[in-house]
Length: 386
Ligand code: FES
Ligand SMILES: [Fe+2]
Image (tube, rainbow, N blue to C red):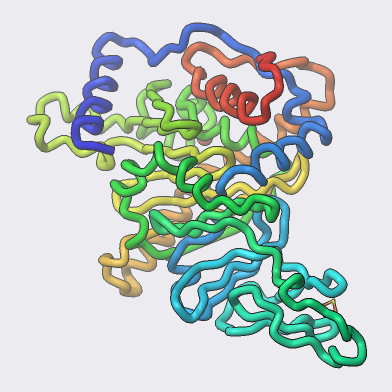
């Protein structure tokens, strides 16, 4: 975010408040509930969105050392992330090329080579097949080069290892291109100099889109979050901008209004607003004053989503027990608030089957939800009906 944008956003929000107005889109819109409840639709989204767009598979510091590795689910696929001896990150399908066993069972560690737990075929952390037990007798004509691990496009930038979970795609340029509109803002956040201080994972019985939608409007704050963060926010005031397919939402706290009497050169948006980057499709960065919460959505089924919350903190912050308690307190506040959203998401999912609604309705100040879904429909190249 440039300094001019920062001032412009604050001025816009102060202006909306002064006029007692909202950031309004043109129309009230609708989103059919099949989009959140139909298993075929879910399969299309996994293929058309999650496996065709870059996903932040890891934070760089999770894979900090040379020869470090991580194994995790990325867009529904088992993925092995490695950093080779030269410090270069790789991503592979974590699937043995002999008879398909899961090659690496450990979630994290440090290894130069990976030996399959089934028959011990072994690969380097650059994906080459380097050993086959009893090869000369059993596989006399084996072309090892044809049995490298299946590699995925990977690009390390802005503090994350980005992966496209599609082994038929070999173009790292696609990742760069997708992230280009976010580049200015991601540089502004400086997450390459951050590490994970606290993390938690939840499994929520709700469609992934409901969880994204719950994070990009302030209409619900004073109601759903009345016992937690609601009182710190003005009623239903927010703004958003598109950065390519991604969205930057700005949800001011009431302290923002104090800036009216202060010179513009002192204005700092992180002190007075929650900024949420929704990196299309399923990553959100919740920017707080002194840290950023990385929310990774891993859709498991049409009605089930794994959510990983990780508090990213600057490496420059003292690594003391006291600071760790501070980060844990902050993560607990985020978690408590998000649990209110998760509960609503699960209840919404249960209601889909009831037949009460054929569609969800988005008001003019919920335009961000429509915009997100529009981008989604365009990305999947199906006619837009919302
Ligand atoms: S399945 Fe991996 S070595 Fe046989
Ligand atoms: Fe919420």
